[in-house]
Length: 248
Image 1: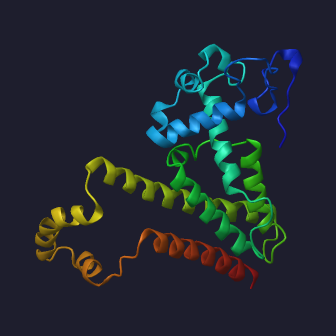
Image 2 (image 1 turned 90 degrees about the vertical axis):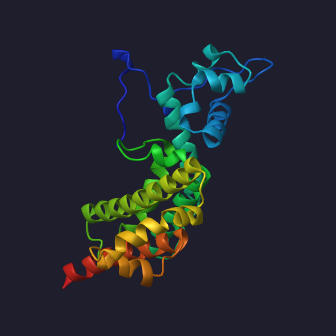
């Protein structure tokens, strides 16, 4: 859905449609791409809290006021950073022969991007991202479903796309949160288990948690890669099963 701009009313174009300032000779040349890349490097190294126009300007050896010709606010900068990561996720060509293969590939590519840029997960959710790369990602997702067997209307397409997105986002937030907690505590998973093990053993010995005791002793406890894959399988199987049931 295209946004309407009425310049007669003095509306400022969104950053995606606003031209950059003309190039000029300078010891520290600027562009939106250089600004965004510097901001991403700051966020990758130290988290979103370290990202500001002032700090990005310092990295680029430029005065902060020069950046405002390219990016008007920090919110615009964050939007541009998110869109740059979406460019890493969405391949230039279709990712699979069918809708399941395509959605699986996009989910894994999203996870890989989030592992490279943990802050990316913090900026997902809420209002839709509408940068060109985010729109390309959404188009890749929905076009894989549109016209596939049993996807008879656009509401079904959007519902399925939303379900896969919700699973992927939830799984990534849980994974990234655990990674951050491990770093903050200074303890590995094995060290945490060693420290908390005696307490857990005493609690389970009370007999009040029989299912948890069975899970602790008998479950396979797969790693994060396998857990993500199995969960994604369940989501895709559920979508396929619901579509098949509805058709009967």
